[in-house]
Image (cartoon, rainbow, N blue to C red):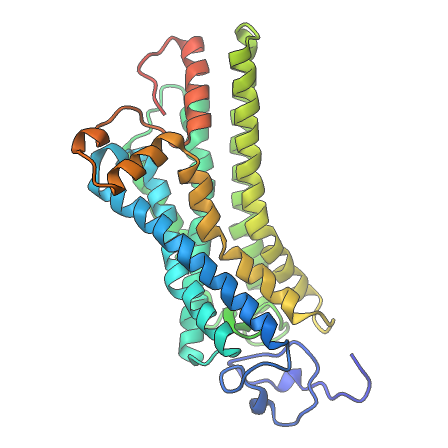
Length: 368
C-alpha cells in the first residue's frame, strides 16, 4: 500500500467493496452502482470484457436451447443417460440469461448501472447455474463409472437414478447459492465492478466470508473434482484391464488412445473453467490487504462463464451420434430419422468401451 493514501476499505458500504487503496473521503462517489469505473481500467478493457460476454451469449444460447428443445421433442434423444446433459444445458442457460447478459450490459456501461438488487440477482443466478453445471459434470463422470465399471455388479441404471442425479445438482446449487442472500457472505460487484459474485475480499466481519469461501472451495470444487478424477481414473483402468485380456489389436490400442484423450479433454476443461476462479477466490480471501490488478480478478469470473459454450461442445457436440441427431431434428427431418438406433452419452467412450465390454462379458444387451 502506498504511503500517504488513506485506507478506507473498512468504511465501505454494505453493498460494495473496492479492494484497493482509495484517495477520497467520499466513498459513494466511486460506487460501482453510480459512476463508470474508469479509475480501475481503460475503456478498452471494459469493452473487451463486454465483447467476450457477447461471444458467450451468441454461441452458448443456441447450443443449449437446441439441446433442450430437440431432446424434449424427439424420443430418440430422451435416454435417461442424457438427462444430466439436459440438466447441464439448463444450468448453462441460467448463467447465460442472467449472469452473462447482465455482465455484457454492465461492462458496456463500465459500471453496474442495473443497481444493487440486480447485482444480488446476478450473483445468485450465476452461482446457482455455475455450481449446477460443475456438479452436473461430476454426475456425468460418476454415471459413466457406474455403467461401465459396474462396481455394484448387476445394478441397472434407470430413469429414477438419472432424475435423482439431476435433483442432487439442484439441491447442492441451492445450498451453495442461497446463503449470501441471508447473511452468510454477500453478493457484491467483483473485479472491475461490472459483474457480481460472492464476497472474496473481506474477512473478520459480520458476513463470515472466510468460512463461506472455504465451504465453496471444498464442497463445490474440491469434492466434485475428486469425483471426476476418481470416476474417469477407474474408467481408464477398466478399459486397460479389458483390453489386456484381448489380443493387442489395432482396435484395442485405438480404443485406449481415444478414451484416454477424451478423459484428458474433459478433466482439462473442468480445470480450465473452475481452477482459476476457485484459486483466485481462495487467494483473495487469505491475502487480504495485498494489492492486485482488478483486471486479473475479473478474468477468472468472466472466463468461468465461457463454460456455457465449451461444455456443450465437449459433452454434446463432440458426441457424433447425438450431434447428428440434433442436426437432423433441428432441420425438421422426418420422424424416422429420430428413431432409436444407439443410446450413448459420448461416442468415443461409449462405443469403444461398450465394444470391449461386450468382448469380456458377451452381453449383447449392453448399451451406454
